[in-house]
Image (cartoon, rainbow, N blue to C red; front, side, top):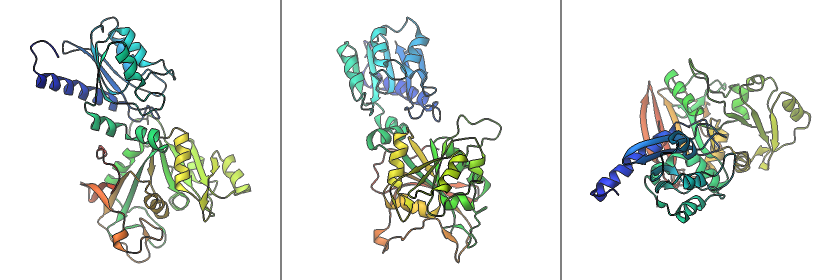
Length: 383
């Protein structure tokens, strides 16, 4: 706190600069995973000396980028950052060491790093150097921002977003299996935005066969920053080697199965896919095993796009963190394909309850965003 400054004014200044650090961190969305999004602001006498954010995986961390921009002017400054500075040698040198050597006076940090290689080590290094460390400012917002990273570090699996588009009576296709198009152009366009924000897009074998999707990020007028990993779960029915996603080279294709498939496996591998066998039931890969393997590969977030059996598997096993549902003002009826399949529950009381509901009109459709009840609430997914 500066001389003559009240506690409330000092806190307001800290809030302001931490919000700046969070805003900077968001700029790395879609470019830094499996690393977290981090922003850093160096301030002295309530004036910015330099700022930075983690721009790309393998590149400078936010704190180092800010220090380089500031040059030799940071002695006695305060650092604001949304995540604990690292204290280990990874793809880049330890940030906490660089901050210590630069001579900062104070560090305001939102949350500890959940990486086992850090977990308070960066804060301890700064404190041992005589730097004043304050932890917890804007912690809720900081955890929400890096929820995929924190889940992967804490649970060893990616964050899971289940996205679906259905008719008013809960169908994703007519009785003949045709699904184009149930939701509006506006909903489909908005739905594709979520693809830019995740590390992987996942569908079941039925969706891959009937819809024959590319599972790519498609931006009108600008190139995609990156293409997510394309993941397909297949059962005994398999997947044809002439599927569009195998003919397209935009992103890697990873196929999970619980059956060996023999020659069919070799055909898929020759088509460019990696085929991984994991434990499962009834020749279907177990979704928990799939997520564990994806977590080991550094995948921090997965967008599950169907179909109904896959949706049920993730929901039934408690593996969905967020739902994004688009409901079209249309009734299909009859033997249409349900948005959620599986055996279901025996009675309504056993149903999967939702919380944190958020509704929005998207063209003629209704968008519902929610979280399964019992999931620890951090913050709703940002638009």
